[in-house]
Amino acid sequence: MKGFGNHFSSEALQDALPKDQNTPQKCPYGLYAEQLSGTAFTVDRKNNQRSWLYRIRPSVCHQPFTKLDSKSHHIANKFGIGDIHHIPNQIRWSPFNKLLLEDNKKTSNDIDFVHGLHTLAGAGDPTIKNGLAIHIYTANANMDNTAFYNSDGDFLIVPQHGRLDIITEFGCLMVASNEIVVIPRGIRYSINFPDGPSRGYVLEVFGNHFELPDLGPIGANGLANPRDFLTPVASFEEKECDYTIINKYAGQLFVSKQDHSPFDVVAWHGNYVPYKYDLGKFNTVNSVSFDHIDPSIFTVLTSKSAFPGTAIADFVIFPPRWAVQEHTFRPPYFHRNCMSEFMGLISGAYEAKSEGFLPGGASLHSHMTPHGPDSATFEKASNDDLKPVRVADGTMSFMFESSLMLGITEWGMSNQVDIQHDYWKAWKELRNNFDANKSTKGQ
Image 1 (tube, rainbow, N blue to C red):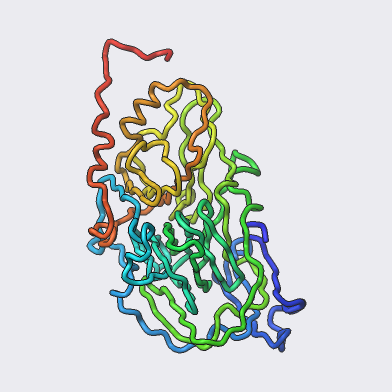
Image 2: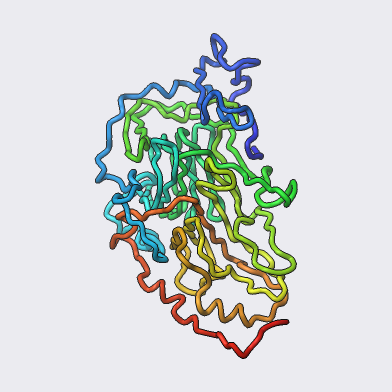
């Protein structure tokens, strides 16, 4: 079903949705009515999110949760000073876990999506619903008879290698590279990997849900259009077996058992739903006269903070497009920013970094850390013939941008990842071009 923020109705059996009310004395087909609230009951109507699920058994039917040993997973839950590394340097990582992708047999154990999650960076605290975390996943095993849900926040998942076959309480989604999927807080799901070993990035926000950015002077159209977001249709399984439910709660993992599938929702209606989006459908806006416009024009989704105009997290992409600016240095300019910028590369080569920034890798430039194009890119762009050219063909890079100061976890600084310690040398060859006797006026 198409649309962003719509109120949808879906049923896998005819007339499974109650008529004219949410909680009849007896639901059709002997189903149970259950509401899933994504916002407080009293939130203003335009921002209120909830869905009604009509299921074979209510989700309360499970054994008590028990805490998983922290050594069994790689999810961090503390992002304060002293808990993680706050570093003002430019940091770049080579592609994560090449070994898993190159040869599945070299791994000692099968790793599903949940156990393949590694927290790389973050800020804030999920218990006060303010902050975010960035995770990397590398996995090679399906979540057989296992479901996961997150009490802490919403997951925005960016597959870099391999499709995700996702079963949710609302139905099924197949998500490929160059697509994203958002699974809001509390929704149960299971991820399988039809293409074998898989890798990708996850942005988790603890506070407000993701929404489309306001367009302002752009007008009524452009950027990510609401019609291009897809939500699954109802699909249920009536399955009785030993089922494992894993819950992320306050940055910790808990596990419970039940004797049936949690994906037994026969019908549902509401606006609190999982959804996916094809990044290739983004309607790019850019300058057609002069100067490089700020990257905020490439925002797909935003999670707003309490301060107007400032985001806990923006999801920004840099898609293929035309560059036509006159007498302009066209790549991203050198800058220092009061935001933290985490960048990942899905495919191709990023326009501002000619070497070192590879698909499946990442970089982080935190608050006021200077960054910009590398030496080779600067020299080339400074001398290019400024005719209209295509930029980023065959490439898709993205940015998780936040107003918070991101720290890096122990895992992110460990020898389990490949930090490019010579990243600073990307700017080493930028030479002094100053000449007090030479003017460039008119060029």
